[in-house]
Image (tube, rainbow, N blue to C red; front, side):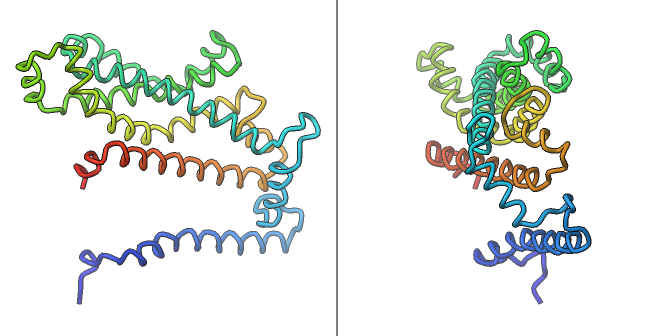
Length: 272
């Protein structure tokens, strides 16, 4: 009899096994929702899929009486713009700081301890400071995401830069390359796929900081809407919004993975 540790499911079975937990969770939710609604039809804790569908239809396809906007899509657009801006700024700063401190020993000795200390500061703890210094507008939300994500990306790129074989640097110098040329033509191409991987890993934290900032000070956004309707126990809105955020996070991660494989296929081959 084949041992379980040696059993590898086929591709079709892998898909089925991956979908099985989701199916079990959905069935369990439906059973629990039906049971609670049978006892109390006005129960809000576990709304039915029909109730969630009606709520989302109103938000997605019926203009708001106050603003005339389609609330669901406006929330999505606002949150994605803040997320992309914050993570984009963090990626630029993280790339520059990581490559420079990883490649130049004098900068590593000077700034690596400071980078480590900054990365240990809880970003949410400085949110009140950002509101005081920058204000309650878009800049504070984007800054929070950038501050929260940039140190992680910088330290990861720093480590990846230091992992590049020193023989490559010696060969480049032997051929007459200057320090800027080594940074741009030798190191940068090799750390770019690592940068995309670092962005993928930091997106979870980026979403956390985004939702926290929107919950405290915002007039739109996915996080704002969730915390707005919680006072009414509107689980028919909260649960679909949480599912939508999860789907967006998955799609963004998948897109970044596809871009990485497309632009840097040699990086994917190195992992296999």
